Image 1: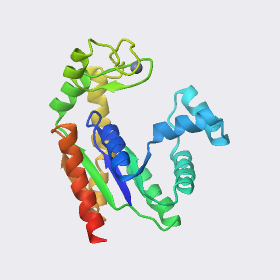
Image 2 (image 1 turned 120 degrees about the vertical axis):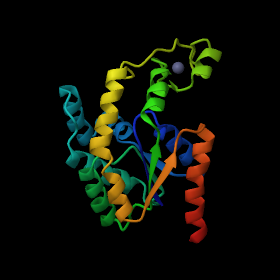
Image 3 (image 1 turned 90 degrees about the vertical axis):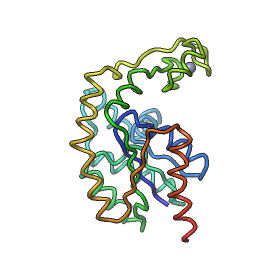
Image 4 (image 1 turned 180 degrees about the horizontal axis):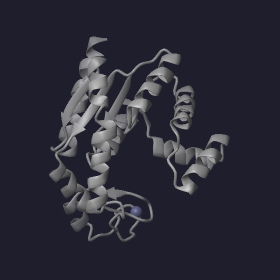
Length: 218
Ligand SMILES: [Zn+2]
């Protein structure tokens, strides 16, 4: 089963993808994680990718697709959750092609919804641990821990990219580049929309319903 999770920044895609992979044994594909993995392995692709990142340029789609091919060859059982990927129509079309090569397709494209005000509120209150990378989304969590990482004890910090102007720009990029996926996946009858304004568990339960409905039918 292949699920895509997409939605604007701050909507909790990564968190939900992690919960779902634990609960349902999905393997998560996140472009960023996979790129970092290839770089640390110093694979031929990793070396190529590193050059783009060091120049500060976007990794081109054909390289991303090579990554997806490698990922699929390593995950032949096909239970995959794509976290924040594809980001653009071009990537969606390429993903369909690459999946088609191994007789797979997208079963659900789940969009997580949140209005701009709530995205701002969440992202501006977010902090992260500069040591282990853990992200704290919740103001109460941060206060209860006294601003200290509960995993490794380092002092939490705000992320540079959680600045109001940067967030606004990221939302705009989402609207322009990723939003067209909605019509595309609607036309394939795999689109689902979920209100992400509830708690982490509420959102998780809504996604679970979609998955259970699907597996019940099989
Ligand atoms: Zn930490």
